[in-house]
Length: 247
Image (cartoon, rainbow, N blue to C red; front, side):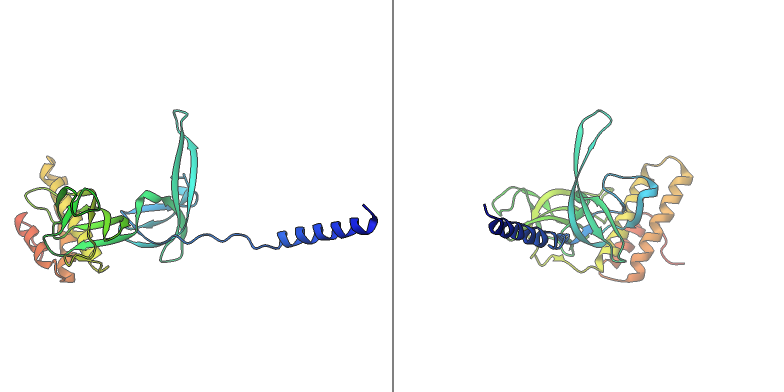
């Protein structure tokens, strides 16, 4: 190779290298809007749970923006490798942190009427897994055609129990379902009150029992103050358990 050809090749290599270095760094891929399945802390780094690593508390049904999914590997106490997917997210007040992907969902559906059916698979011909009860809220895991795979939680205690439906398929377009975000706080309070009353019924300690009833009363009062379509349900629960919601 003569000097002229050598310089030409060297020049091309230099230009290619320079162009390569000037390429912008890859941006985080936006996952999109997600909803928290329960109250949970987000942390500065994946895999951490220490108090010093806490960023902020995200409430159940709170909306966040998913920025990207991170795969985190760690060795457990038995020496086994554990792989967990974490969601890097941004909260509504612009705080960023990490939490397990499995704790977040694509949508929240509120059951406002009776009659909706839950199926074992995403087909009308698959076995029934029960009916959706008014007052349930359903966390969407995935969509497939006209169906959505969900976890549904009952908020209104009936017959001394709450019945939940896990990993069932429903039709989000059903008129018995709503996406109204204002219903989230109502059903969260109804669920909290119902859970505390069921716990109180099993409690032997009279002091703790009264404390749970007091907390349930406070949650039911919040529903009454809103005065939405679940007002009568709050009053019915209070009547059944002998609670007073008015001063």
